Length: 171
Image (tube, rainbow, N blue to C red; front, side):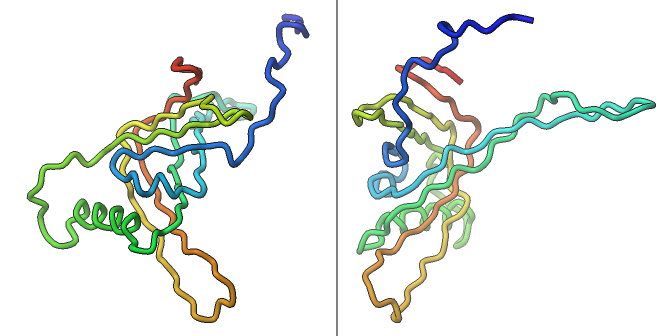
């Protein structure tokens, strides 16, 4: 067993990560990224393999990686252009009105920049081959007494995401 070395194992940066410090870029949907209100870094997990024994079954790490979906909540602009851009893409891709004759790439890149306490780009998360799979409904309500601006949630699938610091992959 190795002994911990406090000096080498200590955290160098004692600033905490702020939930408001982020900037999202979506190549195919730039109007959505500009009005982004919330985004989650998706969870990641591996499956486990159960090994049977005569006494007790036990688990070992498997080799299949599963990524959760990327979820983005954004303000809807008054002309609904950001909402409509995702809606149009989903309807065309899902062949809601017939075959799509345009040969546009279906996937795109998404980048999430995590900002430092000085509001400078610190961590970059890149999502490869991302595409939307769902768009939440928009609920209008005449009984609301205050002004609450409408938001929508878009859910994206992707092949993999990488966490980078200063352009170097750290995860």
